[in-house]
Image (cartoon, rainbow, N blue to C red; front, side, top):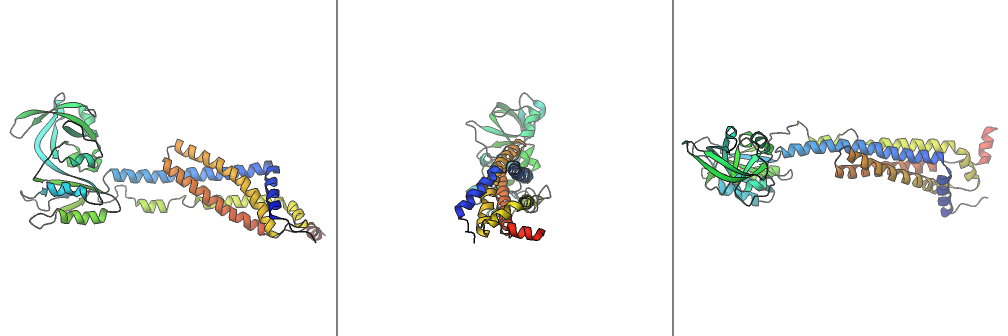
Length: 369
């Protein structure tokens, strides 16, 4: 009777097989690296595309509400104090009042670029994530700045023209903002932040996905005036402007289970390699390598080869994905996740292959006779 192999000896033998395999060992390591790299890069690029499309949607005002009076009567308006106070409410990122005036204005060096002047409350700076200048400022959309030639931070003398035909200058500092998140009627105007009071024609409120529904209801109640008629709370984008459910797009993406295909390929390659080594397995079985020792031997060899290949493939995938323009955080998370999932599943397949009974040399010779 042969003596069973100690566990430590089985592990050492598996590691030695990985070293002695040469071309076959190199092939397995390269295969692991390719699976980790190719699937990881493809997944990172796919998810980055979804993430960026969603971010563009958010930047365009996906969670911005425009509040307007429900009535078209001349006296209907939004209370400025209540609107500005919304920025202190949990779940609301920022809010500001806006009142479109009859005044037009523009830089004194470009008389043909006049546009409507809109008075806004100082909360507009927080709404657009901007730092207020130390001097009086004017918020200019990027598109308007391109037309008028105004630069960010530039001291500008604005010439105002009111309805009565009077003109007066105002020295301000230009602050550029992305007008995508506000209604079209504001994006083409010059916004003058000041401490407005009384009433305004609009109130802009920015929130986040977790609070959007609750904020919509809360804002309608908070801005209901003395007439007890709730104002209109209109989403800046009625639905996804891209007609895409981003959560569904992420869950149903093509490569969501790319790791499963990769692990299947690795298990198939490992099984083929073990089939070509069945003579060696017969020798081990003859010298007392039982199922436990065989599993440990296979795991030691697989762990050595797959570990080298995984590190190689992961590093290559991260560098390649980021170099191709994928989001850094997305690349790190998804390449790592796919690598771990693929290798963990493939390791289970390696164990199953090792548990397949191995014949001794005598049994193999008997089958040939």
